[in-house]
Amino acid sequence: MSIFKKDEPVLYDLSEMTILLVEDSHYMQSLMILMLKAFGVGDIMACSNAQEAIDILKVTQARRKSRYVTNVDIVLTDWLMPAGPGEDLLKWIRSHKDDSIRFLPVVVVSAYTTEKVVSRARDLGANETLVKPVSGKGLASRICAVIDKARPFVSIDDYFGPDRRRQSLEFEGPDRRMIKQEQVKVTREKTVG
Amino acid sequence: MKKFKVEIIKLTNHLKRKLGMDPQDVAEGEIANEAIMEADRLIEELCSECHSSIGGFLKALGEKWSEMREIGEDTPQRRALSEEIFTLSHEIKDIGSMCGYNLIAHFAESLRDYIEETELNLEAQKVIIQAHYDAMNLAHKNDVKDDDGPVASELKQLVKVAIKKYK
Image (cartoon, rainbow over all chains, first blue to last red; front, side):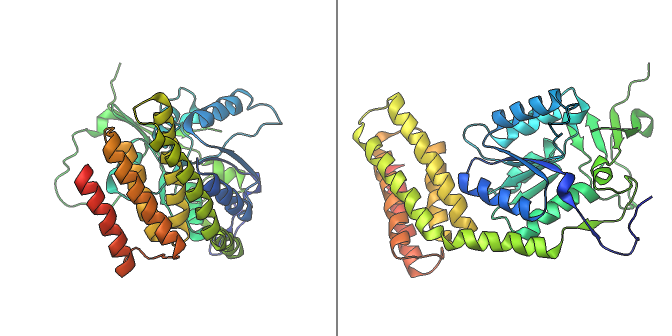
C-alpha cells in the first residue's frame, strides 16, 4: 500500500537513490553532480567514459551484497565521449547476462539534437533522452519518467530494451505487425535489483 | 518446445519500492520545485563564470594548436594534439551552448566535427583550424553571444570561405 494519497503529488525523496553519471566534460560533470545533489540524490558516482562506467558497474555488481557498496539505480550518460562513447556503454549494459545490469534504466544526455542520434539511442535500448543544454526541469522530468513510466522490456532478435512504443492507442486499421500473438511470450514480475 | 519470437518482460518497479512506494502504484511523482530552482540557480552560477572559463579553454586550445602547427608532418604526436583539440572544442561547445554563447558553441562544434570527420590534410587543417580559432577568439573578445546578427554572419562567412577553399 502506498503511503501517499492518490490525488496528491508525490514529492520524491531520492536520498536512497544511486546514480551513475558518465560525462567527459569536467564542467558538465561538476554541474550535473551539483544538480543531482540539489535534487537530493543520495549517492552519485561519476566517471568520464564508457570503460570507466563499465568498470564501476562490474565492481558494484560483484559487491552488491556488501553493505558498503550500493547498487546503481539509474545511469545518466553523455553520448559523444572521445575516450569511450555512450553507445558502447549502452550496448554493454543491454547485452549483459545479469538482469541487474541489463535492465538498468539508462538516460542518454546528448548535445546532438539530430533525430539520427535520438533514434540510435532508442534502438539500442535507452529509456530516455535528454538534449543539452540541460535545465533543472529537463533533468528532473527524465528522472521522474524513469521512475514513473517504467515500460516493460522487449526482447526480439535485433532489439533488447524498454518497449519503444510508449503508448498503446486503439487502432482501427488492419494489424500489420508480422508477429502473431501466440509467438509472444510475456514474462511477469521479473524482480531485479 | 514452443519458439517465441518476442518476449515481453514486465518488471517489478524496484525504483518505486526504493522510494518507499508500492511498485504497483501508478501515481506519478515529482521532484520538489525548490530543488529544481536550486538546480537552475547552479546553472546560472556556472554561466556567470562562463566568459572566463571559455577564455581558459581557448588559451589551452591556442597552445595546443601552436604546437600542432609546428609539426609539419603527420606524426603520432600531431595526432595526439589533434585529439586534444577535439576534446577542448567539445568542452567549449558544451559550456558555450549551456551558457548562451551560441556563436562560440557553433564554431567549437564545427571545429570538433571537422577534426573528427575530415581526412587528414595538413595544409587544409592549418587554415581551417586557424579560422575557427580566430573566429572563437574574436567572438570571445567582443563578447558576442548570439549566433545570428551582423558580426556573427561575418565571422561565419570567414570560416565558411576557409572551409570551402581548403576542404
